[in-house]
Length: 89
Image (cartoon, rainbow, N blue to C red):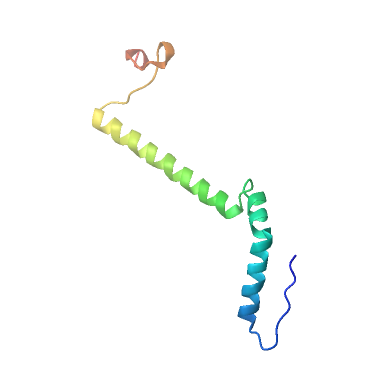
């Protein structure tokens, strides 16, 4: 870890800025981000789960609207799931 010593009369903000610059030059932040790429945080997992739930909900609504517009429910059935009249018989 880079060491940064405070200069006489230097503010905390400028000290932190120099410290961050030294860390960037050394590449620690980039390495830690690279290591962290394969791992999702809990907030990212929650956001992804909510996104997938919304997608499932929208697909369900779209199917229901399609059923209402067609006037009947379309079942997949028969050989190979082709969806002909075999699903109704």
